[in-house]
Length: 478
Image 1 (cartoon, rainbow, N blue to C red):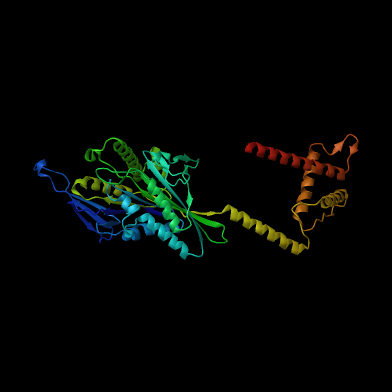
Image 2: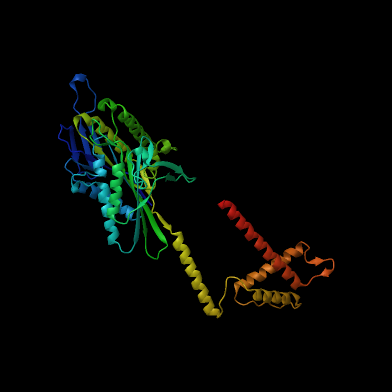
């Protein structure tokens, strides 16, 4: 088990507009520091107690000139390594609309160097698969979109959807152990990097995108790209299952500033509401004495339950646009990140036994033991005693019981089948004697006859039990 807080990083979007006064210090030993300077407005009067300096700490702060490769190396690569080792991982980008979340997670389409975290992580994973010849890896990919609090499967291969409503709707199911299952969310197997990237492109084609005053291509939904990884060593019955969530959250909109209306306004309401529920979960997790965490308030928080305070290694990227008009939103994003940094996750190594391999190994072991036993005894044994062996045992048991000599022994040899059968016959005789079943009106019956009758009654009871089990199975199937 690995206990650690959620790792937080900050990325500042490049801009040609007039920026706010800020400074970045990555040289501190306790982490990086991002500081905003807010000059006082003289129109508020000479007596003005507003804060002028806002300072926030991160693991690292990436300024405007940072490259996509540096983002992957310092943020995504450590999480990918933990997923390869068998731990769950999550990377999610949070920030206002137009601050560069989608560019960070997915990347840009103009240049190859603009690839984001998802394609670079897929390339890195398959590169590690090819270099590790001691294990067999199996990967499945899912792509979930949460639009207006409704989940959609972006990788539906049955039909080409012309509208978002044509995609299958994903429903949340919860089992008695409070584990979340997503119904109608397909898992697509990918054997190589090319197939995985094709699935990513298919999902991005189906995403909900619209033009807003803040962003020409604003994603109007939360998207969760998940890589399900299974690692198994040849000949071993244990395997490691892990999953990697790469989350592109929709950006929050301040309607008074953007002036949205119509469908865009409806989308903004749902986006802001789901982000509000996400912040409620963050606040609840940061409070020590809080007993209830409101995961069920929204679909986003339900899906990310493990990533927030659960079995996962989670990393957050706070994206910020440092234009003067966006200064308040940037400070709000940093405050959200500071609350996230308090949450502690407990990541567990997801190692389990493969039932099919375990059963096959036990069958081989049983067959090997049978062969060794046959070599030692010189006899080939079956699982059940033959009719001749049963009759011979009954004769030996009859002779043993009829012999008045107290020192007489019952010799059955080193065969547990015979010993257990004789014990079962003796138990039946004792139970019948307690119930008055040994005597009859005409006198005592012979032990051999009693044993024979008991043997037939046991066989009939066994047969009736088998018939009852068969009927129960037929009823359950119907």
